Length: 400
Image (cartoon, rainbow, N blue to C red):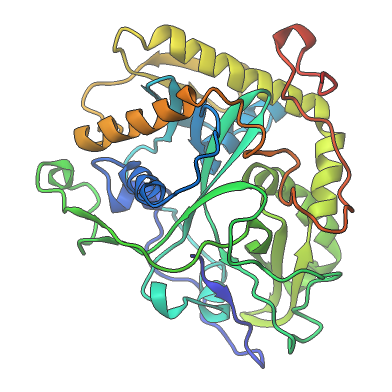
């Protein structure tokens, strides 16, 4: 489970961020098989799942970073990126790939790490965790997706919360059971301790520490999850414009809450917990033409991967900033495999069971917009979805 939002009773002066921050925490932590922790955790949870309801095929497994790169490409705002494309059964996997698993973020400044350290707390069951990696499933353009991302924290009901940290219009408690979305969450992963050594190629060798998966924490509704951002107090008047810049990230991850902390030299005197569901609905309606193109791009990638990877070849997608095209090419030799062989076999069998169920998955996967499919007051507006759309209609969002 993610860290709990625990605001301080009084502001305290925080130290500026310092330390080493990896661009891809998962690759740095387990570079030999970067997807192994996520997949092993799903399989462990599913082993205890007694629900026999058919859930439909998973067409695409990707992280928020790879999906975000592709959406920014469609929007014309992408920086250079690279991702690996792998097939397991009929499911296409998009795997983030930096220049090195240990590539770090240079010149980190501000309070984006010290603020959550001070204002969130890990529950006893998961104390000592370094991050919360979360996976949700939804349907988009008739594609069944699994999307993984790092969750910054969750909001728990607090009758004594002060006005600066209370959610406007909050009427529901955060449930400890899975919400309307078909969520898979994992935490409490214990990898044998070992500090990544950048540039040490031996770290990718046979001496990779054993991955240990343990159960801890609780499953939390997606309604309670938040993303956290910090801003200088001088920028309080720019809040609407700043939120607008975050909407594509929140939309892909189906995160309905934004914690926005304003500070003066590390003293956070204005902290706002913002319910952004209405902005996300408006974003989806306003950006429908762009999102249609995004859906079509995902469909083309899935189709191309299924057509081109049947012979065992391995491919990657690259983009150079300023270019108008994506480049699809064979992977360079020596890159790590997607999963260890035993996990690969179990994962392929589980994905195959989803296909064999014969369901479209519409009853269990959350359709955009789908942060809360089971809202009790019926206040959510039904927006266009793309379940019945295809290339012929250009993913118009109007097919039923």
